[in-house]
Amino acid sequence: MIEPQYLENFPIENSYTIPSKWYYEDEIFELEKKTIFKKSWHLIGSKSKIPNPGDTIIYEVLDNPIIIVRQEDSSIKAFYNVCQHRGGPIIRENCSVKFLQCKYHGWIYEIDGSLKKVRDFSEVKNFQKEYYGLKSINLKIWMDMIFINFSKNNLFDMPIDNIKGHIYPLNISSYKYHSRVSYDIKSNWKIYIDNYLEGYHIPFVHPRLNKMIDNKSYQTELFDNYSLQWSPIKPELSPYKKIKTSLNKAFYFTIFPNLLLNIAPGRLQTNIVEPRSSKSCRVHFEYYFEDLNDKSIITDFNFSEEVQQEDIQICQEVQKGLESNGFDRGRISKKSEKGLHHFQSILKKCFSDG
Image (cartoon, rainbow, N blue to C red; front, side, top):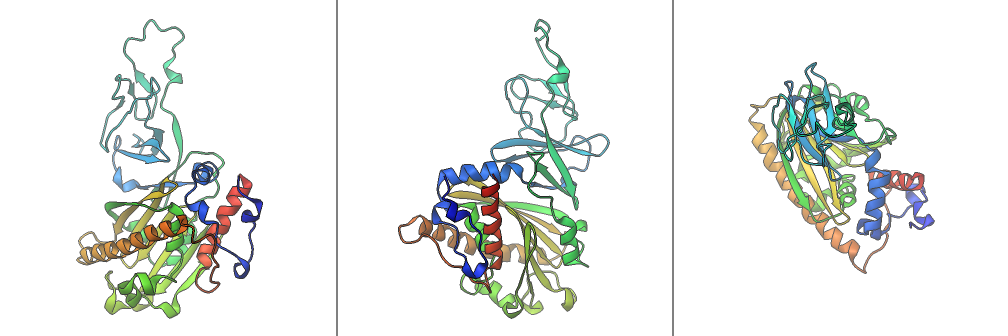
């Protein structure tokens, strides 16, 4: 049980950070899965990955295997990647298919999830194929991105239309998928989010990024279920596409609970922070570019890798610190850690609401 006093929300100037044990206790991790992640929208990726009928994406969220399939009418559906015979896998890798076939006993499904054919069931009484189709999952498309949700009672809708307004006239809907990189990190997922939510650490953790952005103009804006950090970029030091100075900004969106969007001139980077255990997470980076032939892409990749390795190191060190006897709760800077306070306030409310 969580002590009631830790669930109270106070103005930032009176607030403390959440208890350190929330970053390593299994009980808290299970509570998060139940009260947050099972009710949240999860980004799968761009629909441009599956342009043709029968194209599939396989994915896993909270240990649930998922298939995303482009339909004959160009719509997109999501199913559990689980055969309704005895739980076998349907698809093992991204591919294009005319039908879906279980890899265990060969049951065959149409790409719309309906059961088409089974072997050796002629003598099974009261077996009706229409009741044994693949189990579907809620799916929505926002800004050409595929999201799924395991619950009909979702916590929030995705604030994509709002995001488009914040970054106008940049139009990331036209950006093209380039590649995906994943990192396994020995830290709780919230440490990674906390770290992302403030620029307070940048001068000490990211020396090259610190020179590139304008710290004096660094801003944090708060909204219902997301926050935005942004800063002008110094063009002469930027690894990104060079554009008009007035648009040379870096935007960092955090959409509760675990979706991060890094938007810079000519590129979108989505970060999905996947909780793996109470003490580990996996962060999936996907890169989208306005021009896939832009020569700045290699520079962008190298710079991103540098920043990510710096973040991984500090997050793993913080995990050790939070698990030690030397720390419990800290205080929060009103000037520099508004995003962190906002995130932790939403987290506590989710726990309180159940």
